[in-house]
Length: 110
Length: 297
Image (cartoon, rainbow over all chains, first blue to last red):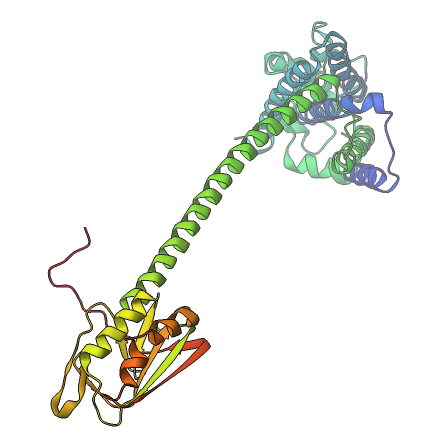
């Protein structure tokens, strides 16, 4: 319940407060979002498998986001930013699918 | 989860240090999950569905899920906070995407790529423009030459229609009226008059306003001293409409031995009236005969 409320509040804040990110950070926001999605799916999967731990979850979420952004930033510095962001998105996408499959198996046994 | 694991519980997540992203349990690590599940089983026994949990890492059932959902624990608060941040980020990103009209947030490589694409596209479009303009010029000149050919054909048609007598004509000319009360004007005199008119530059000739004189028109005597022109009897007085230079045509009738002197001589005893007209219209036409044998070469 809190989860839904939190999601709605977050979207509402984003829409009505119109916060702006510093221009330098804007290219990394999409990557960070994908990493966060990965962490969310992973966390839900861990919850379904009864191995969820909120500390691990928070740390993994933060590090996921930061590392994804960092990889892309480093890529930008050495001139392969576009390729590295593609790579990160591909890897995180695969992980999201894997986690989604595990969630599906746990919930629907199928 | 109402009873989250305490941080010092041995968890499979903490075991492999090579994997920094811990929250997801990789399939490879699932075999070690029973340890965690069995560790928490004493706590689990307190829950209604505890009997299931004691055996194996049974996934959370729907009942538990719904219960956890309506009775939130600390885990869900954490989840809510993360979702809040996530929703905020997504909303920001979506807003930036939709409102993005400038390219300030793009990377330099992307901008260069964009510029290259646009340059190539504009080159392509320019060559397309040149091609289409060439086609347009080609078609334009085609239209022009067709127009010229059409005008030339129309001009020739007009000339030939007047020459062949198939079209009405108008222009400056003279109207010659021959009063011949004694019916003594002969077809030879009429033919000579026509020949004189042609000598003087007559372009269109019509007799009595109904008979167009063309190359095949013939003159002959009819019954009772009447005259036949082109197969039709003509009545007197005879009117000859001639298109041409009025002065030259008038002169051509008035020389000694010409039309006027012949008609007004005592032998014929008629009168000739010549009126110059700046705009004479001849409506008499001949039906063009269809050629049976001759074909255009």
